[in-house]
Length: 271
Image 1 (cartoon, rainbow, N blue to C red):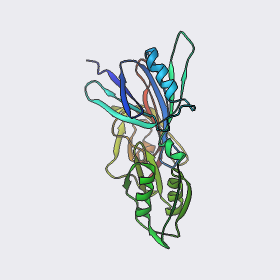
Image 2 (image 1 turned 180 degrees about the horizontal axis):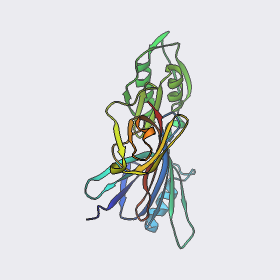
Image 3 (image 1 turned 120 degrees about the horizontal axis):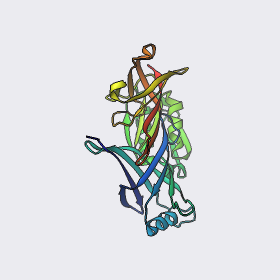
Image 4 (image 1 turned 30 degrees about the horizontal axis):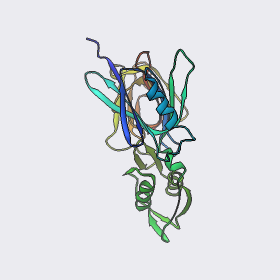
């Protein structure tokens, strides 16, 4: 029996979340285990004219609404259900020429806070974990702090709220990044705890992994276990020299409801 793929798209406009499934949907993007914003582009066919016009109007740079409009991408299988791949703020909406009438949405993670200006300062010595907690609050996300805590002297920041993540990473010599609605802070040479993807030919690997300067690039079927900053344990039959544990530094995704793509491409660093 064929286990059909599922792709579900959530679009939140003015606080109202609407889910779309069963349409022709293609989504691709890149997620980074560093302060760069995760990106996503979605092409969707089959929306009625009213919905298309509403999205084009509300996400226009000339719209009066200052609230962020969110894009949520989920994927999975009919037998196991869907899992979340991406969450971000819609930054643009475009429509293709007839007869296709394809709506293209582009989003960036936590983009609303890229515009909010904040000012923060610490005491002569501040705990990195406390600074991270305040930054998470400024960015409207939760915090997963797994780094070795340390003292940071004379903390001061003034600028876009989102830029604090980069400032924290530099000041603490750690990895700091926002994925979906969570700020992660971890040691540079360690993977996030409890996040392990064992990858081999039987568990979804596509093709042969390729060595890079720092580790490996590998393509495999979309799954719910892979995560930015998490560990990937490679077990390749055709290139055993690359086998071992890696930290996922970048995760590209490409999925389609009515086409071949349903893959992750992970760029990993050797542990």
